[in-house]
Length: 384
Image (cartoon, rainbow, N blue to C red; front, side, top):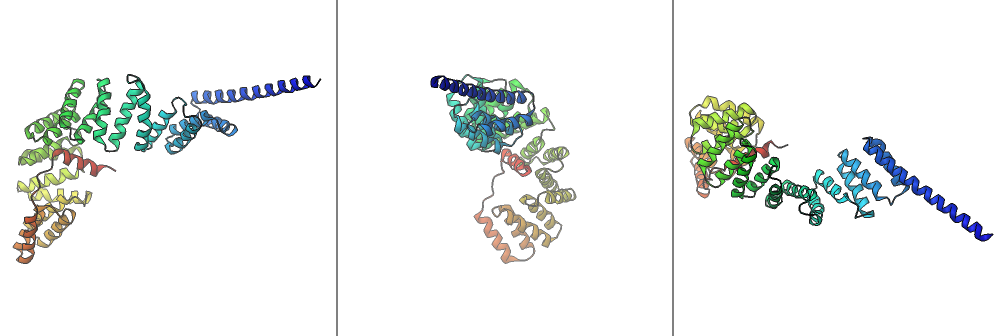
């Protein structure tokens, strides 16, 4: 009799456990069904119920993380993925989702730490390996680690010869890593995909300028203008190269074309003003410089040019203010101190003039910046 009672109790317990398992499976299936139907809010509530009832259910936390990532709540998603990871480190897809959340949250160092071991486990020819190459390359690029980005992106592009957008990123990485032959090699690859890529022409021009091939750089920027005259920076880049070669008439035309595309380009305003001064069009220069000063009062060259204009029109006190402002912004600009010395000399202030002339002897005139450096500083100034 006792054995029958014991058997009956065991049967009841097994039925109860089976019922609980079926309930959990049904709940999980229902949560997945809600996700498939795009009912994210209801799916989240379902997964939260499962996690509450089963705190050791890694699947629930992983799916809650995925739903938070879809809402771009990446910090919350990362915390949930971490919780799932602690419960089941081998869950398929979990590490990739964690890395993607870290990448999108801007924690690129953490993303690299997550992606790198994942890549080492992948078949190099798989789609996931290719995706990881691009993600690792872009993470290094985003950190400014351009030399580290190059091999990842180069291998990714080797395996996908038709990928134009990331090939452009590779060219940018090569340029920033000072691998100029790499830039030119990628440029020729880009031409096979898009024979008229203004951005690629500009990159090749910047690389040639860095390699001291001025004529080649000018030719590339001319090609970029033909390919897309609306490309940001294209006219400024060509104008700057012409300006460094003292071809002021054509440089002025290019700076004006840049301003037609973007009236608030500070560098184009200031360099156009400089060319107008050199061409003795002082009245044209003044309003350009005043606008540049309003847009960016910290651009040293604006104050230098305003000082030159003021001194040429006999406004010595105004010239002093502008030149001192320029000197404060860039104490090592020899031209500023030379202009100050000449102004003090004209005002009969011999002691101050001598002091400024002495400064010019300890400074050497810097070579004109490369077009890459000018365009890069322009992009940095315009970034939010």
